[in-house]
Amino acid sequence: MNILLVEPYYPRKYPPLGLMKMSSFYKQNGDNVEYRQCISTIGLNLDFKPDRICITSLFTWHLDKVCETYHNFKKKYPKADIKIGGVGASAMPEHIKQKTGIEPYVGILPEIDKMPPDYDMSDETRKLKESMVFTTRGCPHKCQYCVVRMIEPEYYEINGWEDAIEPSKPQITIFDNNLLSASKSHIDHVFDVLEKSNKRFDINSGFDVFLFKKEHAEKIANMKIKPIRFAFDKMNQEKALLRCVEYCKDAGINTERIRVYVLFNYTDTVEEACYRANKVIELGCKPFVMNYKPLDWLGNETYIYEPEWTKEKIIDFTYYYNMPVIWNTISYDEFIRERRENIFEKVRHQLNNKLPKEQKILEM
Image (tube, rainbow, N blue to C red):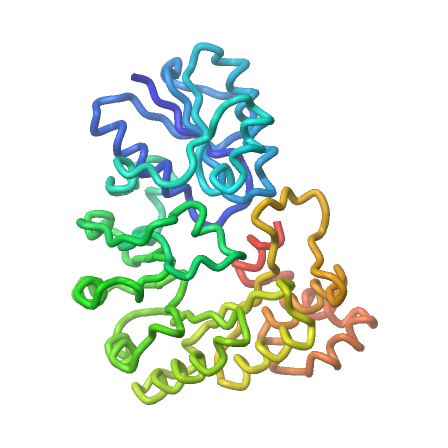
């Protein structure tokens, strides 16, 4: 078969891991595979006429682009079998069906997920510095603000996950949603593989503060992990976070290596969100604040949790706490006052308009 893998053009940090695995799967079956990142078919040059077109999705606020992509390709290749899947489609399958008339695939395709990524899928994936890996799927917490419970409802360990590590790439990024929920033998094996690889690695979703133990801190203390990630999304995580930071300090880990996700604008007040972000700074760690968006948000208006948050407060909070150069210099209250005098724009100019890479992605 001739297989065309399509990623609608929208801002994102990582290439589409799902399509990379699909590329490996179809190539292993002897199919012809090509990947394109586009919305329109104008100027599209392929070596074949596709029999099947697989369109992925990521954020729900880009689903209209996904649907537009579907209609453009359906018009050009009316006989092709077109499928839609991915995170956004799994979160809002009815929206996809309403806009396209087809049922999207929801969740993980087991036969695809067990495949190693195809790092030769595109120029971008060939130049990628890191291997992209899942060693487990799912998370037992089922937090209402998290899409994982919809995409990966069951928690399980993945056999042969090491096959996804590309020896030529100097780094490894593990995307497990909750690695520490796995069995001790699985966790020990993951750490052993990472240690023996001698590669820099990132546990991208972070360590569960309720499951992180002293032995974990001691294990990673001398490993090439950067940064060490936790989350302080809810007030009931405070004691656990403090304990995790102490474990790290006792193991000789500099707190500057620790990055803490801080969810805000989700059933919290501005005062509470500031407390959590300030607590992270007080601990000597760096906060990375993330503005909550509902799992069915299409991006057609700014989501605000009433009555505390406003669009202006969301912008103020995001830029202040995600820029150490600011919170290391002035207090949040001072920032709010001086921002009215254009201080933020002055700081941006001094930094040559440079923001943290993650923040650029979240803003788009």
